[in-house]
Image (cartoon, rainbow, N blue to C red; front, top):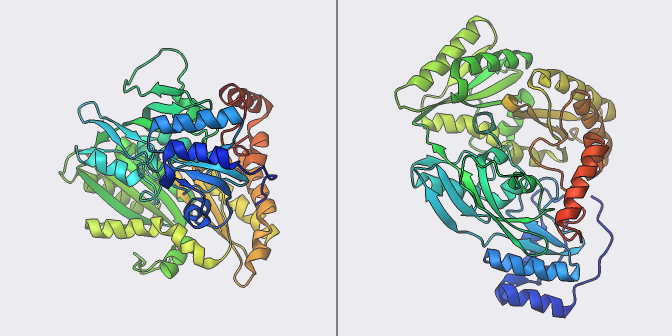
Length: 476
């Protein structure tokens, strides 16, 4: 990936002033100490920071930004460093501001179904805090042990729970944000209804740290399901998933909490590269769907409803086979086949990833057209389309041809992605469903959004960050 032009190194005096704010142990200039913040897991971006700051409070974040703004010093906010589009990575010696020490659970209101947490908590820690009062925070990502809630909100993360609960934007009632000039906006509102002017929180959710630094949030909680029924289903063709999804929604309504799809090529890759996985079926099938239904009472309703859906689908020859999990262990085994996809792709060499969305009814047509376009550009490439069928989010990944050198394949990134995005836009879709824009998709954003939308976004950026110090080179 292309790096930005070089910026002057920070003076020792300014580094000392930043160090005085956070303490000597939390202003990292040693390359070995900085390394975890400057290397992302796919090794696509090699970061460079003049100093890594680890503030321990909102007030320290405020002081950092006030000093940076006064001197025009670029700041790159970072949470768990699990982003996939380079939005969290300093590329030109900027100051990296990590929120990882903001670990407080400020309040948990079980009766009001809300909790107020700080940005550095991992998603798993947020879920555990909700669990202590028998509540559910439903955002679900494979990286939950590493990703942090501040980053989840800054990128408007999605995941497998979007179908029933919505993405990150739908799970937030209020925010605390430090602005570019160091002012703190206290928008930690736990009200379900507040119709007083603009909804400011939605400006910062999904803004990828370009408008402000999220330091805390009021999150929505939900009743914990008393039971879950999980099944993996085999399909003769992906078009049948449309009919199955429609039938499942009609029968289960909001109790349908997951509807994931993957092809045989992806399943074989997981079976080959992820230890402890096994094929649930004795025969090979071209497509699979992983379904989950939740129940409010532990009375077997979820299993019964799911079984009825599958029986009806089998009678209508919508599905060719199905396995309904008989235990929690078996359900976890089914989910491992889906959640192990990222792990499984890495040993296969180069991988070009597309995170897109199209109308649900158009998913099969999109994949057919995208496959044809990719194979014209790179014969022998291995398309690996999978994702969240119920919300139209397709992770259209492509593995390199067997035997092709990785650099030769990765050199085709731009033409392949351009071809896929052209088809996405032709279907009225989005070039980013849940991963964000970062630096990876910045060039394509203008074409996808149009001039009016870009003018509005630039005006918002100029109003909130007139000196352009927040995450420069990302999104816009």
